[in-house]
Amino acid sequence: MMSVNENKRSRIALSTALLTLGALLVGFGWFIPSRFKSIPRAILHEAGARSVSLVALAEEAIAEEAAGLAHQYLAASRIAGLDGVDALEVRLADWEKQNPVLSRWGAWDPFLEAALNGVTLDEYSAQPGILGVALSKPCRDALRGLLENSRDPLVGDLLKTGRLPTYKRLFPLQSVSGRPLEAVLLSLGLLVQGDRLKPSLKRELRGRISDALASGDVAPLEDFYLDTLSLARSLNWGQFEALFERIENMDTLGKLRYAFHRRSDVGPLIYTASMIVDDPASVMEFLALFGDDGVEALRVASGYGVGAITMLVREQLPLEPGQDSMVASSLGAYFVNFSLQNPKLSLAVKYWAYFVGAFLLFWGLSGLNRSYRESNTKLMASAQRLFVSLASVIVLVILSEPYLAGNGEAQGYSFRFVLPVLTQVDGETVIIETEPTASMEPATLLSISFFFALQVLVFMICLLKIRQIDRDDLDSLIKLKLMENEDNLFDTGLYVGISGTCISLVLQVLGLIEANLIAAYSSNLFGILGVAIVKIRLVRPFKSKLILASQDRLAILTAKEESV
Image (tube, rainbow, N blue to C red; front, side, top):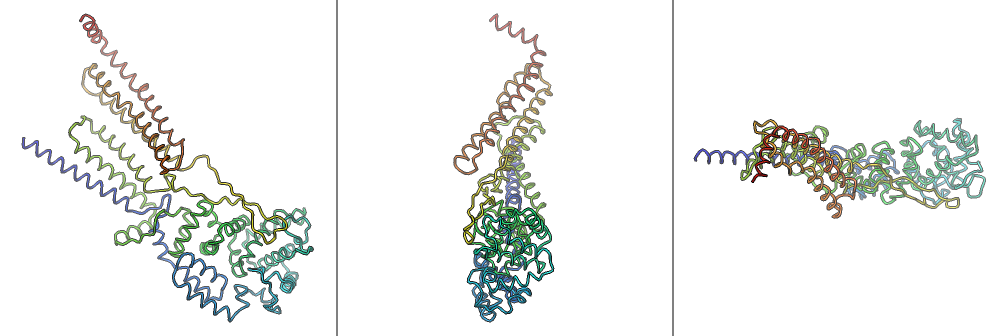
């Protein structure tokens, strides 16, 4: 009797140890930050802490007398809620009082200096941005005189396009209202003359200009001019020049124009991000994926530092939902730093901890439950634990990655718009948005894969049970009775399939996951197919074999029952 009690105590102690170790491993995996479908705020904060802040960039721009960039950095810093902005704004205002012309330009430029040396500040236009410099007649005459003497053939061809009569939304230069177009051409001419354009954008511009001069069709070129005009209204020369130095193609320019119009309240933030990553196209790709949520992520990253913005745009992942939380413990800081330096390894360690922890948890639970326990082989018991562990890992991964479940799905910008009509030179863009569609969302594929994996594991368990009964040294009639006793096990696939469908529909109704009937009903479909395969391809042939093996004894038993 003592040995039985000792065995029971040792079994309970072992099960408790397994449960404790399993729970610790699952907690350890949950504690490790990783970037799979989103970036944790702790990792983003750590990346930003290793770099300079936007306020430091603004201070550096002031020191380099780049007033235009300084204004953008300070505005972005204020949007991000950083300290020290007021003092730098006072310092910048004092510098601008001492240098009013450079303040209007946004940065010193040798070609502006050469062209506008004889034009006083009072002769500038009152319009904002570059239009304030290039729109008044004295400024236009001075800039045109400089560019008409240029030896760059692209500058000459650029100025020629202003006299084409086929404009639909802009007025040609010879008309009374041709000043905005001329201001755009002069601004672009200064960029070309100063070799400020990237080679790819320059080649594309040269191709469109050649086509327009050859065919007279200015429509493709007019779109580019309108995008440039929109930016020229909001950016001074220093900001305009610095941004164009980073633009690879005209498509990126159009997306920038859309983003500045769509979110004019955070325009400096988008501009600053484009300058920091040195690739506006990647910033536009990020906004195309995540839209307004992406703008909010940029705002949060801007508060952390330049490194956080760079990482956010480079990874092209959304920011993990939730509030900012600082890592208090040294162990937590170590995990954050480890995940930042080793993203793939930290993800592997996280999921390994989930799997092993879940395996130990269910092993410990099976040891505590002794009121009724079926006698299974070690292979069968291991398969059952493997099945539950894999299912638990998938559930834990979905819970730890909010964007996998569909409820964190962001709506990106489609960058589809209609440009202003002819008379709305100073008007805003009329935007028609269409949401991008995909044939199959990642969350749907994940759900279908999850339900399919469950049915595969159920099939493996049923197969192992049939093989266990077949290998037992028992009479065929006993094996036949055991097979009949396992009917509920062989129907497990159907139960799992119906349960998956019901749970999915309930979660969709509650709004916890995105509505998706394909993912929900795929569970039921896989369950029906799985049970059909098990019963038709496995159970029925094995029962037929047992019936034939015991046909003589069955006949005798049937005869006895009939005689009675």
